[in-house]
Image 1 (cartoon, rainbow, N blue to C red):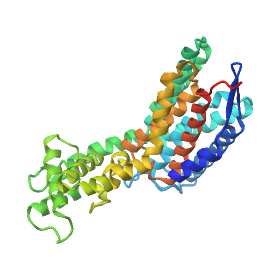
Image 2: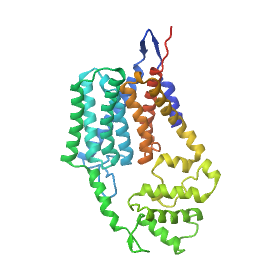
Image 3: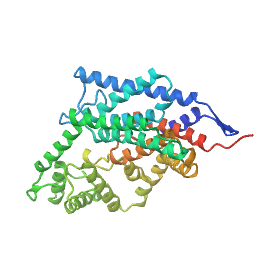
Length: 378
């Protein structure tokens, strides 16, 4: 994926020059990428609706809640659709053809309805709302930076769209909210046999912990550091009243304890791999997992190029604030969101399909950075 980022940045790089305050920029490449993304987004969302209509869609969760089409992971398809929405919104106002813009709005509407009501993930519900809000903020920021007047009509339309989305969720309902209520109801059904009280770990982890305490765990099933980390996880989860359905928090605590208990600088540098013995402890929070599983060196090799682009883009905002337009802002927020989703949700930097979307966002942002930082050539 790092190599793919390098190739994309090289092949799809645009050159810009500025003479006499006039920017001459090749728009052909960015437009081609945007068109490709819109085609991809169309295929994704149309296929999902076909699967729902034909009753061939798999469910997002094992409880039978949510629709995710024919795709492998609900969180990964949520990330793909949300990040694609950000990128498409970044240049939607540059689409001159009314028919083309109407088509894009239709696709985004279908995406919004699906993410907010049908897929059942928090990434989908919250992500699309955030995308809409960011689009509004980006437009306002551009007007402030350029000291241009903001059309009350445009502002009213944007707020109306956001209000419509809220109404859709309230009236049609959201499987995301249904999923959260289901998890809430599950909490009281997972009992810790050693105490007779509601457990603060998942059922499997509670069983493993009790086997460790009673010296009943299969031989060589875990290292001593892993066993101690399970015990530390149990104590910490009870101390801070962690919900037994909050698997990501349990994973975070376990891996932090594992690093501490291993006491091995080599593993800190090069990572400990997936030293877990149950699927529930495979770290879904990718960003911190890079450090634990791949080590500091692995983290730098993989995430370094992406973080470099993000940092450079943020620095450019402070240096060239008056030249930052709405498209730049949306692309910057897309790249930033990829790290946020990687940390809170996962299925982004470890998923090849969503990684292509992330790479596209980075390539477009690199081109915008070049455009903003252009120097006059005589």
